[in-house]
Amino acid sequence: MKTRIKEFRARYDLTQDDLAQMVGVRRETIVFLEKGAYNPSLSLAVKVAKALKATVDELFVFEKDELRLEKVARK
Image (cartoon, rainbow, N blue to C red; front, top):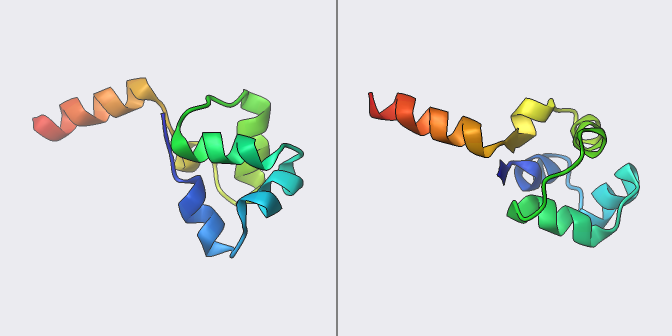
């Protein structure tokens, strides 16, 4: 999974710790989310999206979507 969390955090000049506090998780969770090493629960994904004034779809690109987008791009 790819995320755009870091990009959106930068828009609002938020640190990983700031975002973690806003959504009630540890900073390490935000680190793992940004690296795509952790698939969040729907609840956490929604909290992160709300904190960053974005939609879940804007922040997270899941593997199936990535593969589909690659196939469309090749056509």
